[in-house]
Amino acid sequence: MIETRANTKKLFIKTYGCQMNVYDSDRMMDALAPHGYETTLDMGQADLVLLNTCHIREKASEKVFSELGRLKELQNERRALGGDMLIGVAGCVAQAEGEEIARRAPVVDMVFGPQAYHKLPDMLVQAEAQRHLHPSLKRAVIDTDFPEEDKFEHLPSAKKEVTIKRGLTAFLTVQEGCDKFCSFCVVPYTRGAEVSRPVAQVISEARGLVEAGVKEITLLGQNVNAYHGDDKGRAVGLGELAYLLAEIPGLERLRYTTSHPRDMDDALIAAHRDLDILMPYLHLPVQSGSDTILKAMNRRHTAAEYLDVIARIKAARPDMALSGDFIVGFPGETDQDFEDTLRIIRDVGYASAYSFKYSTRPGTPGASLTDQVDEAVKTERLYRLQELVNAQTTAFHQSCVGKTLPVLVERPGRQAGQVGGRSPYLQAVHLEGSTELIGAIHQVEIIGTSTNSLVGRLKVKAAA
Ligand code: SAH
Ligand code: SF4
Ligand code: F3S
Image (cartoon, rainbow, N blue to C red; front, top):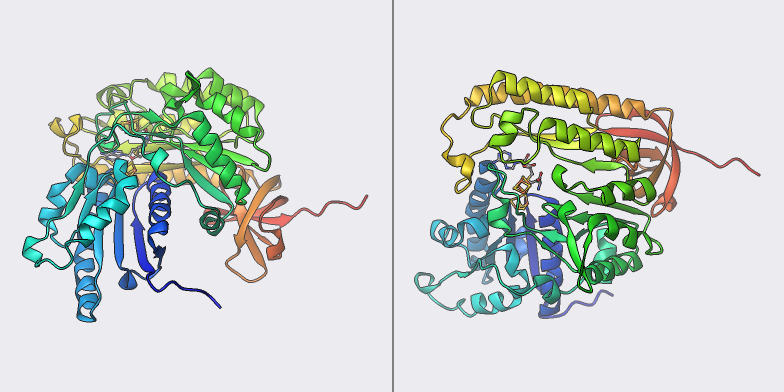
């Protein structure tokens, strides 16, 4: 029989934005579990709903307010039945807009930024203390400080049972914040200055994940390859960290994201040459192929310097697959600048890429530029760019047909008798096979492609 505690409260977290928010949402669950909260998949049943938000583009930000409208209705329904629902807004919109959120959406009980997650239990006590007050007297609990203390030291580390539920792959945030200040980007303002977690803390969390059954860890950071974690007074870079993590028995795959071209140093490139555990797939955004636009974006590198970094990576690891991010329609982008972006895409040959129309973000230097690009022009450029990238992705998938790739089989497939997993290049792979294959890396012959994935066949070892 399943034991349920009488005072168990239900928590629903909705996560928007990047993988760092996914990691943070898990940490918030861990922080609340000792206080009697367990997660529910039904928002309507939740005693506490947290929206972990993203501010990166206008559309991402605005999603929060439409969701809060819906939550108001759910809260009313629960109250009509004698219950209640507390509502918190976390993440980058919370950090950027703070009190403004509570003003615009009075339904919100708590607003807190990414550096305050360890204080969540205390904030909840404060919010709950106001339950009996008349709505006109309630004040949202707000915490958008950048505290001196290290939140990771105060957050419980990944719990074994929670981790098992998360599966065979896990995220591990090693670095937060960004000092690069690209002129389009809100991250330096929402996440603050670049901070790296100490080496011992990272290793210990990675060991815990592996003991709980995790085979593949993706190290996370807004600028992950700028990692410089303390190890007894010495700064250790991401390359050296990779060698240390490679020594953990049972850890089979290591990835990291997102990197900046300027921080791709020799030690990290050498790690790609030396460590089989480091997967041959790298997300290395360039944003534009035009030096004029790169300068206006304050990217601190030219197109040629980016291509040079890629050449050095490929010399170390010839099968490296690349992925990138692109922004079209940055203020002042001419037809020629855009053609330069298409050219760099052709020169690199991406396995995949994400692309966005430039979105003006309040408070960033880009917001004060006057030569904005017409919306219709942005739409047309995005379409052309995505057509080119899609063709490259298809070509990359097709180039894998006939090869045998190690696939980490992670889950049952969409159809009975099938399982699914990932190739070293992060491609989804489907194959016929029993669920007994789940949990290990198997040699799989790639026999075809379907939309955005590969079709494989288990390579059966020849009898001796
Ligand atoms: N730290 C990473 C990514 C940060 S945000 C990096 O340095 O690349 C993820 C992506 O969102 C960026 O790479 C960029 O392509 C896109 N992006 C950021 N700000 C944007 C804006 N104002 N408008 C459109 N896209 C943006
Ligand atoms: Fe944003 Fe640039 Fe920092 Fe990436 S490197 S998070 S794009 S400011
Ligand atoms: Fe969005 Fe914040 Fe991540 S703005 S992309 S959730 S760092």
